[in-house]
Image (tube, rainbow, N blue to C red; front, side, top):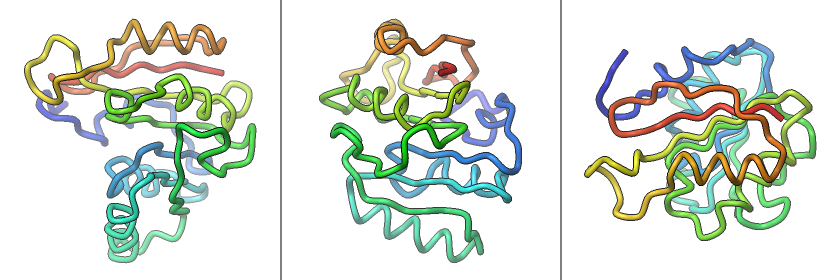
Length: 173
């Protein structure tokens, strides 16, 4: 396992993925996790959601280059109700990587993930370790994420390795 910066494949190796799962990457940017998810969920679908158009255009190019037709790219505001545009209770997995530290309303984003997850669906939150001097100045602690998830009645399942500078938390609806 790569212990340096965030490696999506190492993170996904720690999850129980099935080829037909329906998943989303919230705050996908140019597809940090989306491409790797799409390659593993070949019979499923991966929603890629971001508020910025430019990285979504870059993701569209990567999708075409990789020949992946199981990605649905959506421009959406995850801090707004139904901001992902994904139907309620429809996904098996939501990944939120390096997004919460920059969000004004962290609860809204986790609440949107909760809304779109099926019963027993899995939420994976990856963010910067507060104690590292790498990354942004403002960080969100694992405890803060767990407290938000707890209020939404998401069950904390386990911590996963996300490299030297990040933590990974797995919850189940």
